[in-house]
Every structure is written in C-alpha cells, then in structure tokens.
Amino acid sequence: MPQKKYGLRIAGFVFKGLLALLIITVVGILAWRIIDRSIIPSEVKTITPNHKLSEAYKQYGDDLTLYYQDQSEYTREDKNYGYFANAGTVFIKEADQLQVILSYNNSTLEHTKDDYKLPIIPARDELVYDVTVTIMYDLTPENESDNDGKTEDAVRYERFTPSSLPISHQKTLYNYRKYTFDDIVIDDSVIAVYLDIYYMGDINYDEDTYGTLLLYYYTEENIEYTLTSADKKALEDYAK
Image (cartoon, rainbow, N blue to C red; front, side):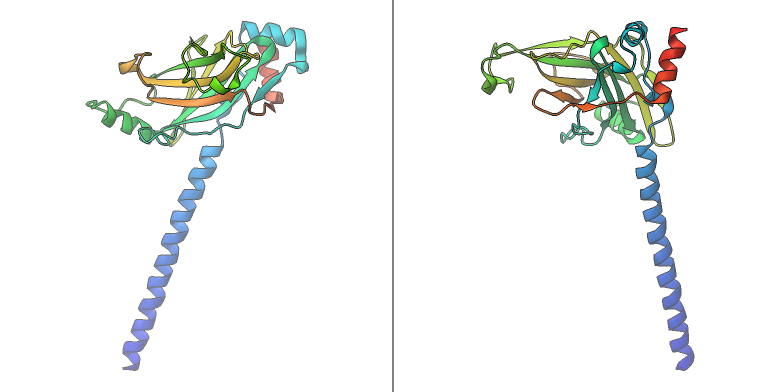
C-alpha cells in the first residue's frame, strides 16, 4: 500500500507538472501573438513620401499638422468580426493626404476562401482586397440631427481611390498593406471618413462592403501625430 500511494503521488506530481507546462505554453503563445501583433513593421509604419507630401514638408517642415483618431481598431460586424484592422492612420492637413495601414490575419484569407467559395486560399502576396476611402459630407450644417446618414439629401458621399499601389509586408501571422490617399480635405463639411474593403473578385460599390473601418468622425478628438526620426529621414531622402 505505501508503494501504491507513493506511485500515485508521483503520478500526481507529473500530471500537475504537465498541466503547468501546458498552461505556460498556451499563455506564452498568446503573449507572443499579442506582442507580435502590436509591433508594426517599419516597412509600413514609416511615413510614405510622395510628391504632394514632399512639397508640403519643404514648405512647413516640422510644423506639418498630422493627426489621427482613436477609433475602433477592428471590423466588428457579425459577418467580418476581427477580419481587418486599422494598424495606423495619419491625416496630413497641409498635404491634403491620408495614409493608412490595413492589416489582417492569415485566417482572414481562409475566411475569404470560405465566404466566396474559392477553390484555394488566396496567396498572401496577392492584392486580395480592393481598398478605398469614402467621405461623408454634411449638406445641412445648420442641422446636426440628420448627420446619421438616414435622412435623404442631408449628406453626400464621395469615394477616393489610392494614389498608388500599396506597400505590402508580411510576417508570421499578419499581412500589412500601406495605402496613401491624396486630395483628402478634412474641413467643417466632413462628418466621417471610412475605409471600405471589398474582395477583388466581387467589387460593387453599390453593394455592402466586405469590411468597413471608421477612421474619422467629426465629434471625436484629433490626436497629434509627431514625425519620428525615421519619418523625417524618409522625407528628406525623397527630396534629394
């Protein structure tokens, strides 16, 4: 009997040790994924210069007005919950420009295959999604009660396409696309700015989007973005 109890005790220690190891492993994986998700690759994080931004930077330098808003990071509808994320947005006033980083997990590509009944999962390096910006304008500034878009003739929508092909980057679990939009003027007539996402094989701007992210809303606070040393170097190098 003592030997049997001793054996059971050893088995209990082994079981507890394995269980603890399993818990540590799971927590470690989750922590790694959170940390990995929070680190935006420099290839897309750094401000992307083009002619319009370069000219504005020459004129204003560090006095450029750059900002973003603290909007919901992920798509949250039942049909696309967590599919897409806003990994970084910067409005640049003097350049009339918007730069935005769209990110999505590898599982989003798997969902796209299922949602559109594709024969294979889209490749990570493909441009799988059409990305545009829609701005909602207020046509009745004297009446804020109809700014929800439900009243006919109270608002107007305008769609903007990217000024160039996106910068693409992939890492273990995540995919990034950096888009630049020119002619984005944010003034008192603007109610909201949306990032609209469609599957490339099913683009119909008259139909619902595959995913939409709110980037700006007129009652929300603008948060200042400060140019980093990497941003300044990119701008200076472009001007050479």
